Length: 265
Image (tube, rainbow, N blue to C red; front, side):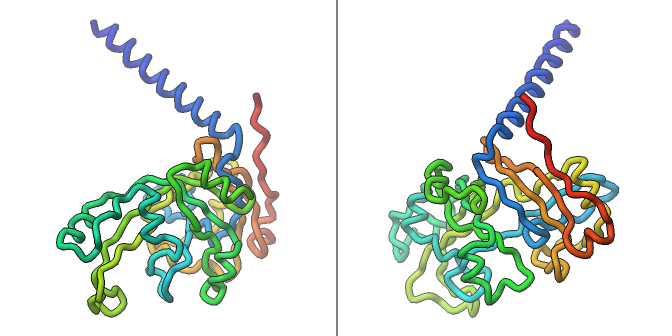
């Protein structure tokens, strides 16, 4: 009996590992989600946890907002967009049960369009000094529809994420009451929000000093020290395809750029 249980457990492990390898290989067959080369502004080295040797890059992104503050809602998410993403926006915002209705809605999994160093970055140029040039510019329940709207895979990536709805009855800047409550959409997260850097790419980045700060908005060095090419594959999951040092960091380390080899059949 014990032998049968052990064999069954081993079979489950083998099938699970095989499935994971197949999915990873399938994901890398084609960069359906796009390919972006971004700098330290957009890909921050995550703080080291304890004695970990794992190298992670945090995606640092922004949105164009409808106001002057970074925490204001994205300018492109309105009630129609929220409904298109699957939120029930039929309840009038000034009805007695509106607050409970909208506040009880969980975030929804969607696909997000990421624009790098494009029109959004130019529009926000007055407030982007030293900040990320990666902007979330659109969302959809269907990745193919999103890709049809943004066909340039070298400037737009498609990735999984989540959007949430917020019922707002007071102004967040001065806490004054709105004449009429409103609903707002927020980007809840990009998934994943951190990208694993495998060997040999991590060797280049591991020697760079990194901050132990948990402040994601802390500006990086005056000039980015590295650029990393990220691909989002057939499953819209990211992987590192190449790393190169920039400026003084390249001169100090004097190491060659690393590029991935073509996937073998």
